[in-house]
Image (cartoon, rainbow, N blue to C red; front, side, top):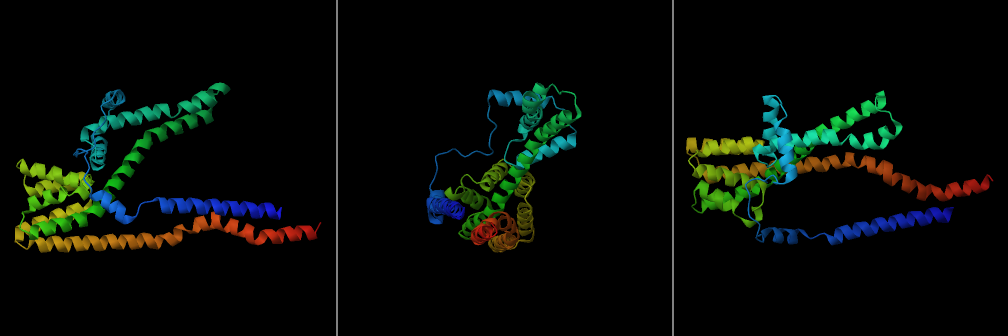
Length: 303
């Protein structure tokens, strides 16, 4: 028994070490990832991810157009979809997917469990079917929420670096609009969510919309507080005639400080998050290794 426990622990440790070494050695270095990001890609830049024009998308759109929701909730879904990077008209596809999942998710339980037992109208199967339908209806909303948070995080981490490039361009003699276009055309940020929003704002400015309104619309689309602060800073700079390069540099430094503080906060939370893996994964294996031989010896004594 002792040899079996020791051999099991040894094999588990060996497999874990091999998996970790493969993960660490197989991943690219930071320098290689940054060099790959600097290389230009041949993909056409899109303003927003487009909804695939397939048969399923068309069907989901027809289903979503028949859903009657309150105007406030419909507007909330539309704003969240725009903040996630989709077009505002994709709200009908989103509503159709909610209805479809609410109908399809209870089917496995209905066909595999309730139908063989012929328990269609019992209280427990009805509750389970209702719960599956509710989960299917809410699942796209949770996915959309995660998508919005992920895109906002990308914009938050990209904004200080992009503002540094814009500051250099402004100090070199370019105007604010030209500096934003030049920073958005950098290969490092070509497919970034922030540069896509900046391209949209610059297109609106070229079409005749005032710069402040264009950036306010960008802040409303992304729902990022730092973009709103950036818009306020630009409007105040234009109103009071202060140095634009100095304002951009100060704002980027504040964002970088905020990003560092958030990283320190996340690092401080790791000690609490490590408690559960230590208690449920590492300590039992350690107890088996340390106390296993003693338990075997005690069992032999009391035989």
